[in-house]
View 1 (cartoon, one colour):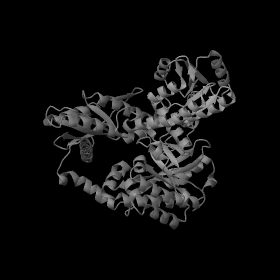
View 2 (view 1 turned 120 degrees about the horizontal axis):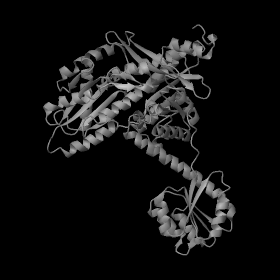
View 3 (view 1 turned 90 degrees about the vertical axis):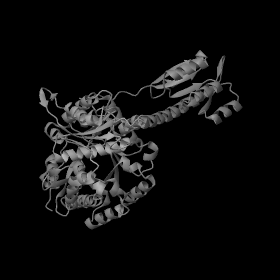
View 4 (view 1 turned 135 degrees about the horizontal axis):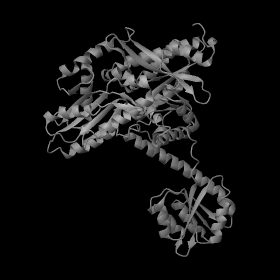
Length: 580
């Protein structure tokens, strides 16, 4: 069973006061607050500075005149320490002119000791504002951490690896000493998730991360995507030794992983490139190592390939995949599966997310990560994305004709979203299907949200004016400041599954999820948690205030007709289905 959320910490008030009677009266007054309060009294500048250095404070209340200190010096000390803490003067003998001066400099209020009735309203107001400021600062700091760290494995993410590698390469720019960038993809990892569940899959990723982090002394490992890792090796004896180093890194995963006495074997496919031969900057090297990894994967799992500058050799398999992708939609090879989204309060199925698949005639069913990056690169994503939107709209209309008013959310790529006619095309699709715009939700990532902010706001407002809902997908994996989020007309934040995985036993994941939910509530947004795999996760998310969730705990992605039957069984009502 998940534990109850911990009670709120007491509000901490620092009091600058030397009169014991006045301090006693202040304590008695603050006891009437509807929250616990922790007081600390100081009487000198040194004591106040020590208290400020020792911890965080929600409010400072200062008498004006003390034997060796006063309110003006206390306020100046607070400013010198650059502490954003509300400052209230409470005195019976401060000249009005002095009080006005300090208020103009930034003090929050002045209370005359002869009028104590003002004390509680002022304190309640400042503590409330202090709490809001603290929550915003905590949210900003948490989001900054998410910019550079993969929370599931604890490894740096790709952005942090590029920064670290970039600094190391700059230091050796003059010498030109070789360095190595390796990208590894775990083979058939999707089957492990499907066979054992995401919980086992996630623990396997964590163990993989630990092995890669120590496989080469002085190297840096990072997690790039679900089953994709990178290793930056700062020093290579000679270019000829690079492949041996890569194979040694891959071999670090050969030993079986033990789960409750059951061995699980992993293999990986690796691509690599060398500095300075294959690129002069970290971002280019990482991109080219990833390209080499995909090239190795097309030749068969478990291989190793170096980046090849020869376009004819490097692009052959890509061109064949691209040719097939160009005709995939007209040939009926693309199809959508739908993963239900459940209200955690009522347990009702309130919608679903549309997920595109490609039934390749030779390669079988391909997940989006096998072809969407290629579609983005070639511009085919516009046609594929348009097909996905039209198909999602068609399915939503068909469900309504069967008596199931399910909303459908669909991911939109950066290329598709930036298309000038995107909103207009969606409007036409809705009109052709005679479907209310509220039945469709558009999902965009944080990176799409933050790039070209002015243009993004205009497109989002056009969609909102139509009645379309907007959600931010995989929230927490990029970086969005509060100031920016407030600018955008969005409706929902979707918590990335990597944070949900460790919710019940990882304090960092719990802190991140709490922060995202608090941020959403602050901005009056809905919250959907992705990747919910257990009843305990679902229960705890509901306890934390999360609105909705999706994941294997509820159902795997399925075809539209199958989802209707699944929903009918869940409702226990065969009459939930009507003939189309």
